[in-house]
Length: 76
Image (cartoon, rainbow, N blue to C red; front, side, top):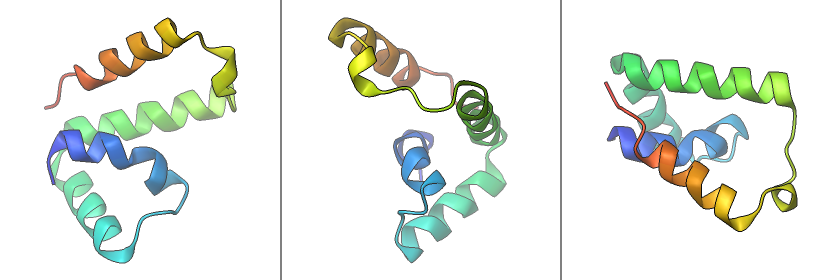
């Protein structure tokens, strides 16, 4: 699994929505990649501090800028 694939699956992983092979690949990548481990920790921290942010509260432009920022997030 690449870091990009990992980032795309973070939400599904946290929701317990990955099938067994995908979850295994996710956890295996997590064990080998400190950058993705930090990303997951940051994601969990954001969720715990902000709670749920309804999608409709973001403008389309803001949503796209956030998605672009995370797509370009450095992967160690």
